[in-house]
Length: 98
Image (cartoon, rainbow, N blue to C red; front, side, top):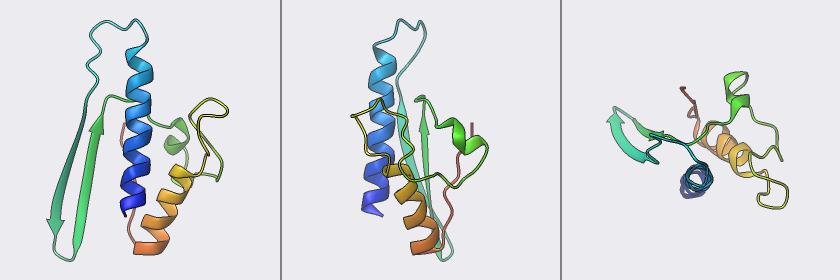
């Protein structure tokens, strides 16, 4: 799960930094994280003003090597591996709400 958190936070922080470079008025770069215990499960929530992967609107299953970063700046494995770790490794779910 440490790898999952690292990948998700790294992607969000990267996108927040890129968006800060654009001339957007009224754009507050923000990310907050919360946790909640639900019986035998833990719910981790993350809210960010970073851009979210548009493919998640169509399918929760991200293809390996898909990347939101320019060529040479990412491996394309972070989101796909994170999804597999959560769903296949821990029997959980990884969802995005926009």
